[in-house]
Length: 388
Image (cartoon, rainbow, N blue to C red; front, top):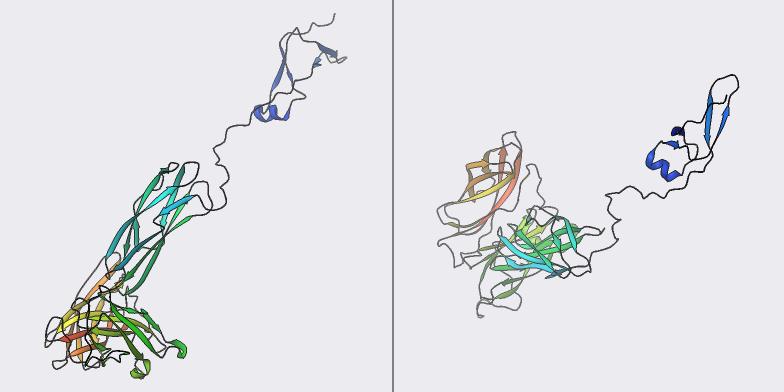
């Protein structure tokens, strides 16, 4: 007697759709008594194999969910900057200026700010990363720009990355670091025999008249102005000549004025004989002591990168004055060294004094400090005197 088919028996699947296989991995087919099946017996084995004869229907299966973002759109997002550039105008040296620029969504969809990154440590910003700008709306980006200690143009950038776009939005920041008196151009590029002589525009940023006391300790060579007969002006055109310095070309060309808030205006002089050897890493190689009283002394500070190597001594390299180490302090960022400038007792007027500092490890650095030695605190010219 032949064995009866067994109802609801599990059978291996021999054919299934790829989508179903991907979703389920492996499966079995359950054949009930109401579905037709063929049965065959292996003679002499005592076993039987049941094969499903009905076709397995193709089943459409949706792909599994994914958290991947759509591919970024090539190009710049439709983000408008108001104002287009954050311009702080004239700012005093070593001061901080703060302003706000609006990031306006000019597109048809909301924008999410992924990241905001300043181009240098001189710029700090408020944290707007993660904020969403609605269509037609805006987010305020507040930025603070730290001015350099030396006069001249100052520029920085802030890069804004918007979700879904490959190109960043660049916010431009700029300022003109200047005292009450500014010089144009702010530096002289006299390398390789170029610009050995030329002209400089010296003008007050507030439009007030003033006098030029000296140009690096020498009487000014004016163009179109006679100090003997003409009244003081707010702007002058003066000539310079690098040949006047001979072999000792200074790193900074200094103009002395009678403005108490701007007694010394320096212009960086790039020349083969003015480049110093950078043995000790300084935060700034420009060193100004301002107005020093005649017969007295004045203190000034230099800043070194903190490499754990303090300064142990300072000496002058000129008979026009001395330099003494007063004190120093340090933090994780820098070493601040306070020094004292003592001009020669009979010196008056402009002073450009070379000196050297020595570190604990034996390194030395040649530097220059410039000052005006005057009988009064400011507001008048001392007699021009060459330095060094």
